[in-house]
Length: 277
Ligand SMILES: [Zn+2]
Image 1 (cartoon, rainbow, N blue to C red):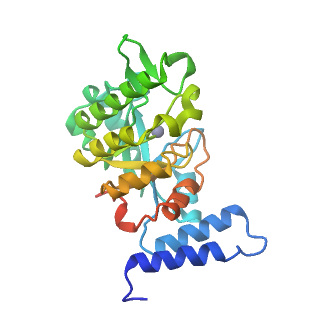
Image 2: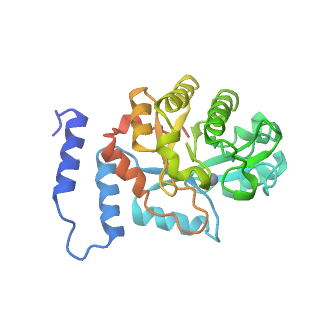
Image 3: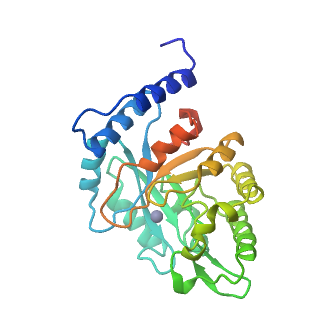
């Protein structure tokens, strides 16, 4: 196996995996843990860079889950207006409270103001920073938060998409982040039109912005985003990926969608971003 190209070894693994029936009585979780173990052995270094200590989840419980599943973790604090951490003092206090834990430490910038709330030195305490494009102010001055029905304004889906793509391009160009997370998220009213609204032209613009700004794209397992079509176009352009959950409660899961996308989009270990600690 030593002299084979990694792509050949990985292709063989996928064929073997899809042909072999999981051990009798193995639970879904056990099968996923087996897949994670196999991928780690192939050099993937399976890491969830988008975990939060939410729903009462403690760092100790997260580390137990990591031990059980073979998933490494990046744990992020949410920083921004309306969040417990919204200034340098709170940000560095949080960092000092978790810095000794053996995980990557992340900062999730919330809203577009986050970048002016924290000093570069405070942001630099963290191993990495990321943001999404789910909060922005529209042309009429409404502050949109796309995951909240009452705070989302869509008059015309096509106009909304054109505006959203510009927002994503602007965020990626101006906010110095390592990863674009919850990528291509659409409000509930547009979800059924996802494939129609994310046209190849719009995908290409986001992919170009990621590549030009050297920002990785998350494959989000809770939201099952972005689509395989999006991932394939990003891979072809040389964009790097991360895997993430963005848990809203104490359930961290098993990165199932991300594992499926590795297979479906034929991703290799070198397609993934790695945190330089
Ligand atoms: Zn998050």
